[in-house]
Amino acid sequence: MKATIEFENFDHQIKEIVREVLQEELMRLRASVLPLISDEEQANIEELYGKPSEEVDRVIETEL
Image 1 (spheres, one colour):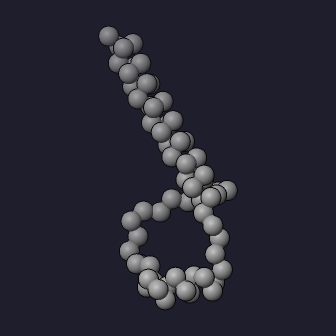
Image 2: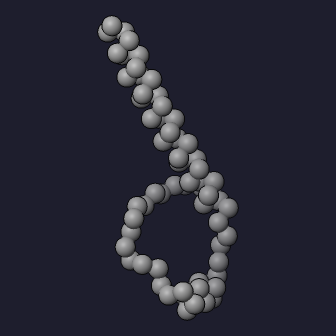
Image 3: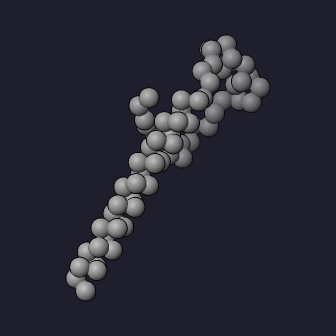
């Protein structure tokens, strides 16, 4: 019984760790394929669509 509970807990921890690593790697991949834009292009986008909201949903930082 005790070994089963420990294995289930271990299994859950492994799944959570793998999920976190995959999420980080997907964020790196998404960031690497985003095109870089010039200040002029950014100004044009802001003119057409307005400035982005100051409200932040969530922030994920990653290194490329």
